[in-house]
Image (tube, rainbow, N blue to C red; front, side, top):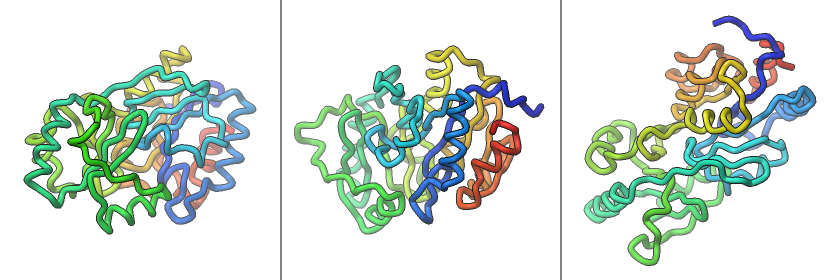
Length: 267
């Protein structure tokens, strides 16, 4: 890969958990906050690219993003809160999951829509996971009562990686799974990924791929890092993420974002 000149990069896409936010402190490192100030001064656009809901980003909005890719590319919102793209999971897959859950009572899952996030049940492991990412545990819902099955944009299914392929093939065959944790899989409409969200914003701002850079650490970041001109894996990234990255920086707790931006002469 040819190193880019700093004048070429106009848009940078950032994952949240393990990239912007430390799992240890649940904070954005001071060096990353300083880097964002310098990027803004250079008129470089900064975007969130996450599996989280748009409504779960309150604690990082102070970084003044130019746009938000949420639900792994399924819901894209501008700084002015204009929704420029959204994509829902086919209802037949949602119905299939609900039918499957009746036969497997230990299965935990959450439905994530434009307006709400809810769970079918809460186990101690699920509780710990939400505490780990510093997000309130969603309320429990009875999905057979007064729930719009067409509104679901993402499902978090709490199954282990070994179960995932069989589950997707038999229960949600019109959807695709990705993950950044062994605890659960993000399930989105077939073909959906952070790559789609990037293309939505490139079209919106009239940027080219050669003007992009991205940072990530989890499996759901692979399409993003492979798609942008420069894909940077955090030092704490999963091995499969590091494998496809153009560059591996330090961990989030060791000023990884700042160091990589300096390395490429962006700031």
